[in-house]
Picture: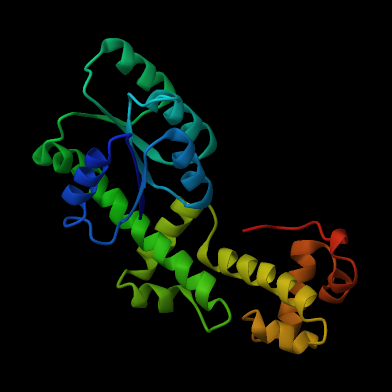
Length: 235
């Protein structure tokens, strides 16, 4: 899971990472010393949880939180040395999830993170499934195969995948394969439809062509000639 740490003090950033990393070794930490750098990171990386210092030069932590909440899906914890009712009201209106006061106390930080532990575990599992699909879409994949690889019950994974992603595993896999097929069709015009189908992860050219037309409104051959005719579907 990707964590964003934002504070204009380098020592504060390092302390947060130092406390959390041993307890959550699979997390990836991104650090920024101002709002502009934080927004650049958020624009490139799928951040799940952000720790924002309220008092920063330039754009404040509250202003940054508002922008992050507006444009991205993430939980936000405000870090502040000021226990102000006004700050709390502003944070609630923005949708900030929690507060942490300075100086940072390890037991308080870890206690705060306990409520996220279950959600974090589930989120990490789904992110791993998405990674497998994106890296191995052209291999033989099924819900049961992936569930076995990440040591989860297939029925449980199916339910959690739908809850987190908003689409079923098989539908997502097919949609992703079709998006990759579009890329292959345009970048490798010398390949036959049978080869394109195989490279995109489909074991039947007929099924591939049928799904492609259903998804895009045109056949793979028509898409190769004029991709702008496709109604499109993006992952």
